[in-house]
Length: 370
Image (cartoon, rainbow, N blue to C red; front, side, top):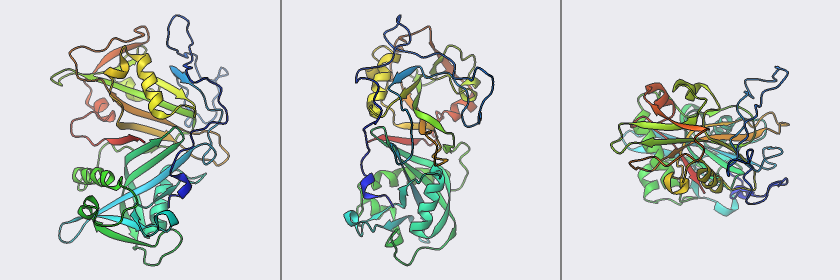
């Protein structure tokens, strides 16, 4: 159940150390900023190396979080989309009836706040069990909503693996029931939010692609602790007839394979809570390519996401998002502002293309900036 107070993000930061126009410069030679020092421990030792891999420091810095702790300065919501095919061939979605005063009796997805100490995915499974009675397993991250810089909602496509439908009302939900997705699309029932139509559309698309076969490369949450807020930009450019695809990477990247085996080859920004997500994206575009804001499309797809909201006492409950930022169709590419740092690399390796979710017809996790 999503608490009423979580409908909007807390955009404030208790530790604002950067002014509103600050994009930190590491080099006076450039009007944009970079931080190139290694994050690796000089002693050669590493605590929990798998959870905190040594990578290049972020290229761009827009503020910095002194700490990130769940329910203190960041909120994660997890929800489950569950579909089935009825005996007459109709596609149905499992909905729950809300108990909160503000939306009492309205229908919505099983969803709620991630609690400290649990993973994002386990929270979605728990909410589904509490509100519908069913045990589910997660198949794919269907959609990610971002509001401000401190509120993130994960919607997962799930399948039932056990349990029975809930029949008795409690504080979590009044009831659970199957409804035709056509009823949802046509608003034939009282829904909590109008975003249900978009969610149903994405779920139906996923169902048609993978209902009878496994997705070879599902987007799942990577359980890695993050000490701040990070965005990695997958900036890709296709030629006019779409026969050639190039990606912007660091000059240190020597092969396509390194794009998916290394963690530091893409343009990356670290930002603080004082900057809202769309502002971070547009400012970074401006510092990566000439006329970047007009030449790079605003992101609508997630390539990968890393976050771990445990242990409870951790101050590394932050998030790292890798997002798709397509270069707009044009004969030529927009010039790179710092060609000493970035290069365009052609993509031909099918595994790399699929891992980056650039294959034709491949399902892509949707990103919505609220």
